[in-house]
Image (cartoon, rainbow, N blue to C red; front, top):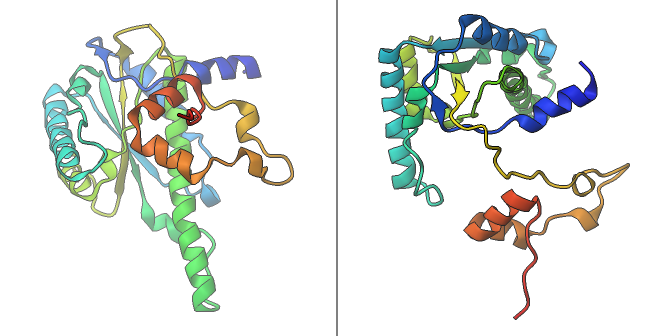
Length: 245
């Protein structure tokens, strides 16, 4: 694939939360997961498993679990008081639950030379594990986009309460982690969202970090605490400057 073709797929990707109730061929689902299994992994550990939910009965059970998760968010999270209940998932053709096998962390660099080194490598093994499974997720999302399918990366599956409930519902072995859920389906609208990434020149630093591009603590605080700032960032890719009174 040429670079421009790949970039076109990347640019078309959107987080889709509205689906047409049309079935997706099993062949296309398997194409998406074929892309996932070719993702890079730490020490070639390939610590992933994929549970595909297509049964309407199982779908309703899973969406009920997500509804409870959203209710907890609204009740206990200070900044997600309007979390959706994810009922839109009922129109998706399939839900792909991406599981990780944490037993393979021991395949990554480790040390018993002293406490400091052991801690450093143990923490890095956690990073390698998450980065490895995330690479597979990215492949899923881009492969789905190339086939005209919509997706959204749902991380709530990794919350401990939700994860336990999903493990029971999906009969996932206790040793595994359910790290995320990726719905697959045809978007109900072809209208692109206005999301704009940060300008390339703002995020690239050659040879060393350019302090002039550093987003201040005040910028981050405004992004987190002021909805209109988040909206402007979504539209324009930059946090708007404070207007002097």
